[in-house]
Image (tube, rainbow, N blue to C red):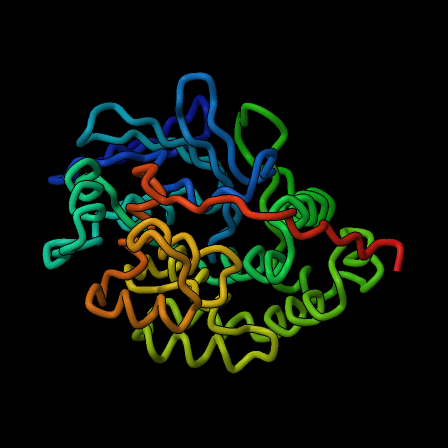
Length: 313
């Protein structure tokens, strides 16, 4: 249930959403955060989640405050504030249906029992999820997050509203498309990734349409862009579509984590896909449960792969 009011004094749209299901705002939105210092995401001292976005109607800042397990208060600023009201239930995972999720592994059964309120949210915004996923291809997260911070703060817009720190809205597709190659270079983004971002920005309209397609058709259209593979498409599907089955095949750690957590030994991608097949269409849900429950494990062996600096090349 939604109820909204326009607060003229703060130029904001305030909405309260009441769900039939228990919610955890921080848990549901945490996959949208791109590392510490993400200029589009913040949690304040009261525990509220602040986030920026770009909707068809314009830029947006919203603050989500958990009032109770079933009630969330939203305050939104910017040209996109009114449109955001209609997107709020899906963002909070209200459309997520885990009723037929029936794991048999004891670890997953226990995780599901401990976190029955895990909801997979849906932003409906493809480029917003796609660009940072491309930045995270084949590099350490810390490097990708730094690239994201630099590019968003330099080419994005200052976020509307009384943000708890300076925050920025990600660039529009037309801006991503026009960022010079040397700016990507200075942000430590190699040509392969920067060219993929530009190609996606050039096709942004058709890519945003995937939010209304079936999972198979959406993946097919995303992967038609050179440089967008199965891992990147899955990362987008998890966030933009709330797809509970979008498995990040090709992730540097995931197969080993799944193997160690559920079998006590590492798996490769093919073995992971085969092992998790009985959990379809909830394979991503299973992986997410391992993560939020703290039951995802992977022993550390040997040195970490080195960070790569492309700015000096």
